[in-house]
Length: 297
Image 1 (cartoon, rainbow, N blue to C red):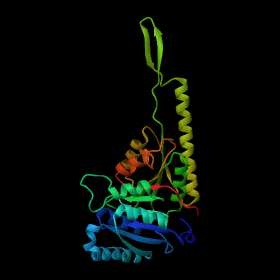
Image 2: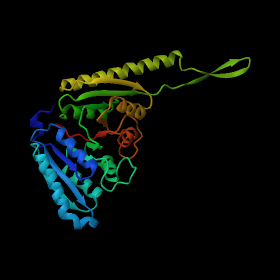
Image 3: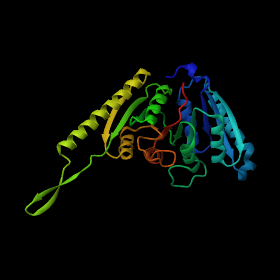
Image 4: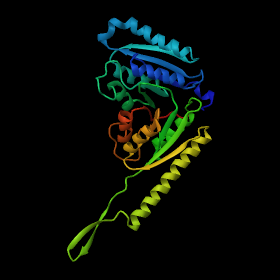
């Protein structure tokens, strides 16, 4: 657990529109044993069409603040008039929180979508780690960190090491090796040139063995780093499509919270996040913490 002195100026920006997912976000925040030094801003932006409901909305976020204060946390409301995504991101840029917590979908989310418009924009463009919470929330029992050794993954390890988790939370560290390629080579026969599967060639076997050795070393070194910060973890090493294997592990282990860096080793930058991170936020089915731009300290 992070030393209490490090939370003296730790700032959390909590989006609260009283939706099912925002309520789950509040409940998850209550379960994180932050010491009283953490500062929480309960944020709500009201679109011009909702101005008539301003007093009711103000009362609602004050109720959330009261609920958090009853847990011993320092919480203050922030209610602004304007379009939610624009106001939320601008506020985050100005206030520079250490962590944003937001529900996966808001009150006006289209039926059937997996991630609401505000949450999608925030997780793409926020200047700090973003925790996207999905309802129903039933507590934090199993948490999984995915790593590929990239700078973003290393930041995720450090952030997780300092993040206070409920007692008895089970922690997993997962790495996914690249899919086995099936190279073809041509053999000359009396019947002509015949392509054959060369997957079991000496070169392919050696390459896969090296990948497995490096992957195992990565997850073990990650577990060692987390253990030094008081967080023992178990290892998962798979091979295949990264997003597919991670989502399968989420289902198999009943993961409540998935933690990922915002970008992997790939040199291709699609929007602001890597494609794997984006798939996990949209489709993993659990809450996801995306790590980027961690403040030093």
